[in-house]
Image (cartoon, rainbow, N blue to C red; front, side):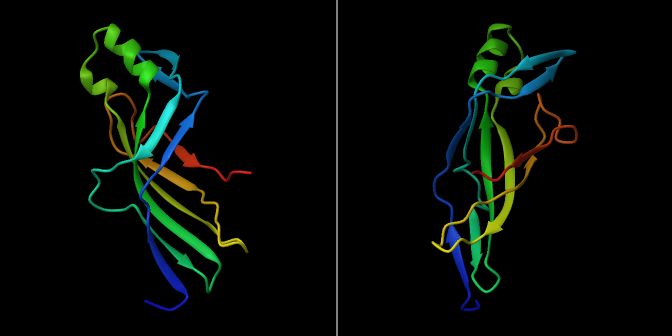
Length: 131
């Protein structure tokens, strides 16, 4: 490894999108309620990154689980197949500038795995830079 590169491991991630997202199901638009995002602890690959101080860039790939507790509860009450209420597996491929204080803000696409409720081909997600 080059001296200007520092590898790191991602060990914890918990985030929530309080306003949720709109999900299309059986011709209807449903609000998911809060969307929870956490690190997929069962993933055998990913959850690692590199700080490239030579170029001032940080890169990270990590596997996450997306859950919609309110929507899942509603669907369970309707008696739907349990596949529809399972967490969505996804991979976030992100990068960003390393700041002077050695912190960094990552942004990039989130690639969803196939899921009974969300089509990976028709669903897009990304991590946007914070403020």
